[in-house]
Image (tube, rainbow, N blue to C red):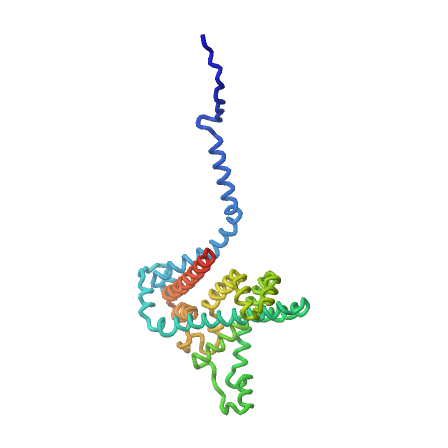
Length: 324
């Protein structure tokens, strides 16, 4: 009789009918993956209540012929996409509001980023004491409310007693007072000065934080190789601060596309001079000036979609460049 003495494979001990170890691991990995969302949940709920629900309400209003009659009666009057069809068929969109919004945003974002970057380079070259003094001084402009800053610029360019007209008259360059707010070009020139003056401190401080993180060894090595300041800036600083510039450009674009107070408070900017309307002011004038809340909501939705498209395109472009 032969006895089989070959070693047998170890028995597999299972916990439960189908084994409980794998489900337990999946549950643990699920909890680990979902932990960040659990931590973000309270903030996301607050944002949804404060931002998402009002946005949904605006979209619902944009699909209605919503005015004073509907507010009083509480009834809804859905008309589908008729408001959007009226917007795209309105000459004000193509000849006034959209060009004013887009061109102004391009100029203001460019001016704000360029001036803010130059100030950041200046502050980076200063010592700690002067850097603190300059930083504190420019933050005064950023801390100034938009309404206050707008009225300051209105006073500077006032047709009767403004500093600009008085100075030009004193120099003999002007014999009669000029109203800077009637012409769309000079009107938006003043708004441009206002926006750049108010927005460049944020860009300067943000870019300065990035500049202080650029390795000095790289800049010194480039200088020893004969690279000038302009070459060092575009070859070393700009690539190193690509993410910083992406943030300031996206935020500046969002802020400058939806400029409202700086345009509305200017003489003629509240709708009396329709040549200076942008999308934000046009939405407000149609909603609260003409009591066409559905039509004004449609303009606001259009502005939001334009901002969303610009942001998505810019972010995708930056991500593609990072992959390359």
